[in-house]
Structures are given as structure tokens and as C-alpha cells.
Length: 419
Image (cartoon, rainbow, N blue to C red):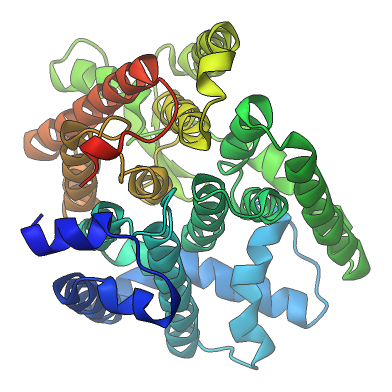
């Protein structure tokens, strides 16, 4: 970071002059990176047509015309991202792609602003802004062609509001709405409720948001698909990109065992000896990890209560545990990780440079695997397997670094370490 950016990050600026304090090169880099993402998505539109966007279009079209949807694999709030193009009368894939990406670009920009505002003082979170510029750019077109950007936007708004000591009611509502799109923002809501000081306001905001979502779902006749995602996710097998699948892929590569890949639930899943046992054991491993984290937070609760940043760091550690012990590791999961990384980045004691570099590297490796080397990975070739190994090792290292940062947390913002 340049000297000018350091000054901009640390100097409180208020009023109408505040936007002028954002470094021009940051704004230019953001605009250029998003233009490249849009072009990348358009160029690969034919590839995308066989995947998630085609599913969004079909489900949205069915709901708009009052038809029955057999199963919807995501939380009901995600339909708020799926339906807008259909409500405009769009029923062709090419038009849906443009409309969906236009909405995604707007949400991505809102996320960028929320990250910049994630500061306990009135200065900008410039370091976090750079992370949000680089992270989604390294992940590629997935950023703008998946539902996860909506959850990311709401989570960034909620986390940012807590960090800058804004309305805790609004923060609770944002995190609850984010969880209604993709479940993971609930981890930060739970962390804030457990370790925050304005728990009643948080609970009120979250409760109002949940009631509104449920009321809309039943009013629109979507009650029958309200809990579909629970069954769908429970029935999924071990995805080839999951951390737990890596030893099995190496065992197959080295001839120690034979594992097949079968396309189910929209992804390639590993099938072979002990996979069912492994899939059953992963939730236990997740619960153990979260229980250890909860025990630490209870033991040092008074220390962690001193600042909302430490509560959000605890949520970040919980999120990494969830991702690493999940039987699914879709590329867009990296968006989940980038949001708290960017929001908390103003304080280097909470988000050290090594942690940033490790997760950005993991993001780039994820993009290399999907879409460029995915077919080769499925075919069992060595190069993508090595890349997957490096990505998984980076994620494990990131969990260790974030856990260490939480262990060192003393509450409050270490302004001397800000960048």
C-alpha cells in the first residue's frame, strides 16, 4: 500500500468530502476488474448455460407462471436473486444471463462499499477494499453468476455495521437475510449474539427479517419448498473438490484403492470404499471443531466482548471450520471467505498479511481448477490434483492463521497495525 493510501486509510474524513478520500487507483482497479469479470462471463456463456444459471432460469420461470417446483436446493431467500429477471418477462438464457449479471454487478458494488465502510472510525477500510477488488477477480466469472453474491452483500453490510458500531438492529436484519439466501451468514449472527453487547437489538432485527421472509414465502405459496434445501443438502455425497475427498483422490492416483466419480446433485461426487462412512463422519468433525471454538469463546468471553471485531473474527474461524469439514466445496464458497476477510482487514492483528496472501492464493487456485482444469481433475490427471492439494493446504493454513489471530485477540482495534 502506498503512502497516499495509508494516509487515506487512517485519516478520518466526514461529510460530502468523504468519497474523495478513496484512492483513485483503488476505484480504477475495481472498475477494470469488474469489466473483465463481465467479459469473462459473456465469453463463457455457452459453458455456463449447462450449469447453475440455467437452473435459476427454469425455477424462476416455473414460479412466475405458478407451476410446481419439485425441489429447490437453496434457502427460500435465494429466490430474491433468482426471480427479478423472470419478473421482467425474460425467458431466454442469453437475456437472463445479462439481467442476472447486471443485478450481480450492483450487489458486488454494494459489497465493495460495505467493505470500505467496515471501520471503527470514520476512515475507509482501504486494505479491505483492495482485498475485495482482488479476491473476486481471482475467482473469475463465478462471482457474477451465482447466488452467493447476494449473501455476500448482506453479510458485508451486517458485519460492517457491527464493526463501525452502527445500528445493531439493521446488522441483525442483514445477517438474517443473508442466511435466508445462503446459510453461512448465520455464523456471524450467532457470534454477535454470543459475544456482542447489544444482543437484544440484534435479535429484534434478525427476528423481523425472518418473519418477513417466512410471511412472503407463505403468501406466495412457496411453503412447500421452504425446507427443500435441508433434504437436498443432506442427500448430497462427497464432492470431488471437498477437502475430505483429497486423500481418496490420491489413493486412487497411487493405485491404493479405486474410486469413481459420478455426476449427482449438479457436481462430480466421489464413490468408492468408505465414502459413506467419511460423509457421515464429516458433520461430527465439524461439530467438534465448532465445540472447541465455542469453548474458547466462553472461556475468554469477557476479553472478546471488548470489540465487535473479535466476535466477527470468531465467526470467521467458524466459517473456515464449516468450509473445511463440508462434503461440498463449490468454487463460489471462496466468496463466503472473502467477505469477512475484507471486512476485518483494516486491523492487521486480526487479519495478518500472510492470511490475506494465503486465501487470495487459494482463490486463484480454485479458479484454475474451475473451469480450466476441471475436466482434467475429473479424469484423474496429476497437474489438477497437485493444484487441488495446494488449494486445500492453503485453506488449512488459513484456518490455523485465523485461529491464532483469535487466540491473540485482546479486543479493540489495533490502530497502530492498520494499513
